[in-house]
Image (cartoon, rainbow, N blue to C red; front, side, top):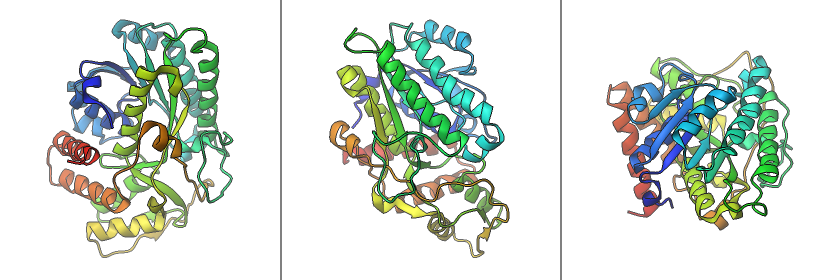
Length: 359
């Protein structure tokens, strides 16, 4: 469980804060009383949770590119954060085939730049670098990947995330070595499964594609209905990132390693199962359609073993998949009715926190 007292007044620097996950994280951190500085390009979609939730009103919003080391370091030196959560990324598999250079430069050199700026900023005590479950070389096997599994990928996106993990390890050993100086920032990496939730409008991502079609009252085009993924609500891994940041701050380098945040096996469902469930919850009568243009190849099965986070962080997912999908439908239905997006999202955060604390 996170400690609200830890975050109250804490200076936090978040990269990628204008994206789907970054927007949810900033809302949560602001709700906890943190002093958040966000550094990112403008929102990647229109509409976006960042704009609809008016998140720029709640934080110190800075527009910038993590590939620009000088500009980003100037902001970090100015605000002197205590915690850094690096989420800025090119996060789409299909887009990585179209723009491989952008994908590698953002995901690899962006991570290099963040860590390089941090090593010259003594105020920073805790760093969480968010990568992806796709950092693991996919063997198409049925058991979950552990933190010491082989890194790599068959596509530019996966390869870039595996490379980002190598960057983290190199910086941990070269510049944040606990044996040299216990006062150096403690750096950990976080690898989450397929994250879904309200407010996601990314292209070529399953749930946003389904919701867009439902809002337009049109059948959804599905590429690979047999693909299986470990689905989880966006607040689940974000809770893990916050827990990890706290432990890195308090227990330092004992937690400076990679961490998986994935759902239980009951949440591993096929794309076809997800769409049928969302259609049922939305209450539509038409059928989805097979996309005649399946695009580049994608892995069929992917699963994370989160035993390490269970054992050492005390992190466990709380929302089952049925509840997760209902929360998503409720969020988008409220958006469709014109309700206040910030209020909708904060209500979900408060409800989630109550579940975590058993209230």
